[in-house]
Amino acid sequence: MDRTWYWKAGFIVAATIGAVYALVPSYTYFSLPADQRNDPKVFEAARPKWAPSQHLNLGLDLQGGIHLVMGADAERAVRERAVRRAEEFDAEFERKEIKGVESKGDGETGLVTVSSTDAAALDKAHKIIADEYTDMTFRSSGANSFVVAMKDEAVRQLKEGAVDQAVKAVRNRVDKWGVSEPNIAKRGDSNILIQLPGYSDPERAKELLGRTAHLEFRIVDDETEPVTSITNLPPGIRVDFSSHEGPGGAKVREAFFRSDDRPTLEAFLKEHPAPAQRDWGIHREDDTVKLKTSYRTYLLDKRHGLSGDYVTDARVVFDQRPGEGSRPQVQLTFNRVGAEKFGQLTTENTKRLMAIVLDEAVESAPVINEPITGGICTIHMGGLRPVNEIKKEADDLALVLKNSLPVPVRILEERSVGASLGPELIHRGTLAALLGVFAVLVFMAIYYRFSGLVADVALVLNGLAVLAVMALIDSTLTLPGIAGFVLTLGMAVDANVLINERIREELKAGKTVFQAVSQGYDKVFWTIFDGHVTALVAGFVIRANGSGPVRGFATTLIIGLLASMFTSIVVTRTIVEWFVNHGKLKKAVSF
Image (cartoon, rainbow, N blue to C red; front, top):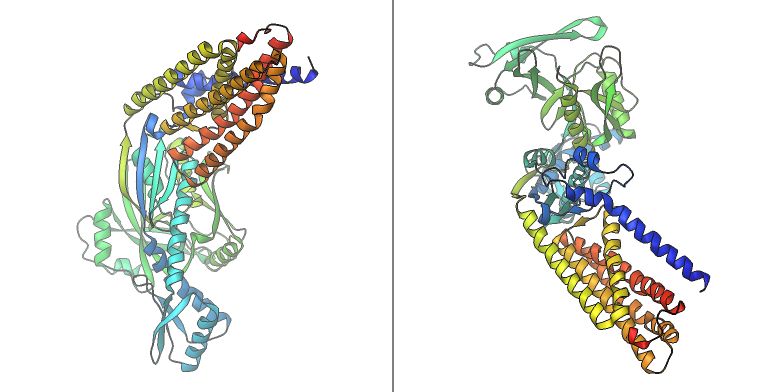
């Protein structure tokens, strides 16, 4: 026997041992009770330490989970773009030293009004917008103003981009949970399909996926008059005071409204709007000693602030200062422009309160003790709560800030796939696969005798290889995936049938067993290769353009086809050649 045979035999043995090794965690995983399989601690305790950590996962159709359809408010992106575009206009006019021109974006209609009493300045502004903002179109004009809006094509692209960004943000958030093979895809123009196999907490999923995480840094106005001037307070509303050290060491006393009921406070603030260029902000305060929650107000200055759009990263760190007890906090990193703006904001407002506003709620309002010019800001998680509770809150906050949704989303459809559905489907699918494989093995052994038994060995190894590769790449097994698995086994059998029939033809032509085996494999190689390659092309196309279970089918098909080529051409030939070369197969009747 030539030396190449030993290399092939060694490779086959190594592949078989590797497949069994890769499937040990999957055996451990499926040996656990169904309600404990998705608990990482239970699985890690049961998994042999020498075995890999990856195991086969079950899809939504097999183990149950959560099915959500969320609608993205793409119109919101257009309205918000109008407000930001007005700010861009003003900044550009200031750079071009055009005085007396004011831009105002309407968050309801998406229109931007540019006005000025100086006709010459207004003409210059008109020319700048026409030359530099080609995505805008002029709607109307008057003696002292003109109105612009986004062009229809720009609006369409903005809406599509907002939904695509929302899909990406949702996918990034889900990826951090470790959900096996989630299906997240765009449905229609503005809907997002989300399927989370094995995830059993729909409320937390909706909370984290639905948060827009719109972040703002707003300077707190410490004027007390808007609060103290209101004397006839309704039941449930009271005035309270706090103080901090202001510029020059002076003590700044701040008045605010407090209530134990948020809806009551919101209704009160709606009846008493904030002064011009101001907004009311509400902050939740938890008293862990008295086990009581209350809500207080902050008066936020609209003229001084910074959007969270400049944040490039958000992560959880621990405060290592003496006396802090290593408390979790969220650290934000700004891009270059954001770092400059944030540095300027904190420099101009040192010793004032800066409110960190997330989704229109004030998370905290620390004092700016000194200018923050390094492009890094820290959000301290308040409250005397257990560290693990604060850590979970910090993790969630960092997750949504790092993958901020560009537009609000709402739940359109929610469906939980019951766990009782999984075992039934698994049982039926597994039974069908085993019966099919068993029938094929028996047929091959009876019809082709020795060569049929060799094909059966290759078929079993083919199945092990497919499952092992799926486990190693952390793939998910679905019902369509099981169908793809059985299909590839059928193609492997088909390849062995072609080989055996070709060997029989060579034997009938008067060739020796050795010649028939050698020429049979050589002549049928390209037939098998062409058939598998064409199927592989189809598999890659389906995987590239499909989603969810369709991708699972394509993944299993691709892996199975590659394994089929290896087992039908390499494995069976190696085994048969050993018997032929050792004189075990001298009669044609063996085939």
